Image 1 (tube, rainbow, N blue to C red):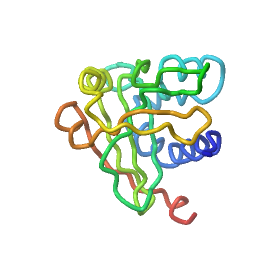
Image 2 (cartoon, rainbow, N blue to C red; image 1 turned 90 degrees about the vertical axis):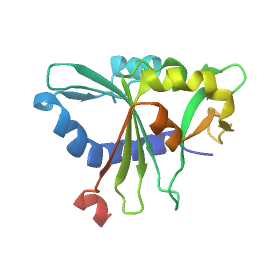
Image 3 (cartoon, helix red, strand yellow; image 1 turned 120 degrees about the vertical axis):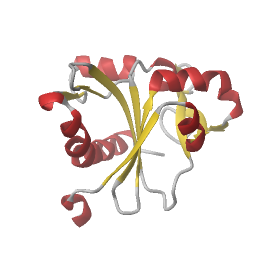
Image 4 (tube, rainbow, N blue to C red; image 1 turned 45 degrees about the vertical axis):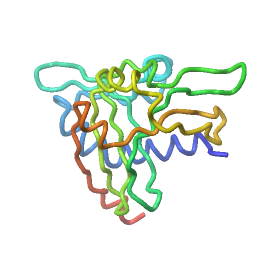
Length: 180
């Protein structure tokens, strides 16, 4: 069974070592970004709003982001896994972030063979509007062998890029990450 806490720690480490210096610090106005890791409000924003990070950009607009960082499996991914059911355990059922996230963007990153990140910054409200009428057409995944037995849909990356505003960029690993 997958260890949620170990996976979460790994994802935060990748975020801190690659995304923070190369994305958030670069695009946040005067360093104005907040990683929602700790504290009661942060937990509520993550669990109820599906927001992992907020940052201010030029012009003063505040942007909210739902982050997904996926390990290198030995091959390039062809689909995004969009969570429709966060928990499917009887008596504890709960909707997935594709239902409840109020973030402006989904930042979906795949770790690459060289320990860098291939990132897809996706307009989340437009993704949800496009996805839900078609959800049944995409292959299901799950329930995963996790505590919550998560389920969702595998949506081809190319389909998202064609139908939803998406910006793709790659980030290189830090020197510390390469040495590890």
